[in-house]
Image 1 (cartoon, rainbow, N blue to C red):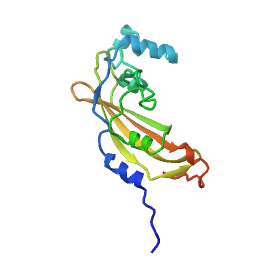
Image 2: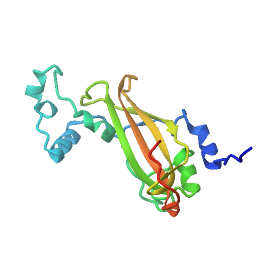
Image 3: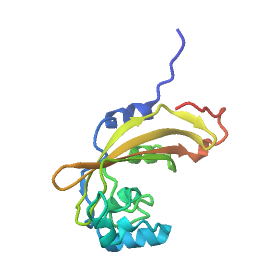
Image 4: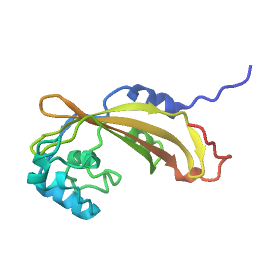
Length: 190
């Protein structure tokens, strides 16, 4: 019988699949017009439903709404700069999650591979978002052009203070070990 290689790192990661990535959080600020203004100015998006109350009131929205693509921006925490080097470059405390396990195992490279946004409804000024993030999946070890690594996918659910789901974001990264570049032929499957 052939020996089967046991992937001890992947075995340690299994306990995170289907579990929260960390504690839930509340967006640092409610949805607000000044942030919407900064966003639409930066992206040169002149849709009047984002800033013109008179025009927005006459639409199906009945008032100003935030651009849907801002969903992730509302939940971004304020970074803690002090001690950032000691946290491996993370802007905040990481806690017990698969990213920390991979970093400790030498998979210190991070590449965002894709992000999918789902919008349940437009956000309105005053909405205070509550976020929860769950690990959806972790691949087996893959060999890529960047080296060996694991694809980690999580889903963040955005809710109002009343619990209404207003959107979701599925986010996938490759955590890789840069010391393994050139080992084996890259695989395209995930």
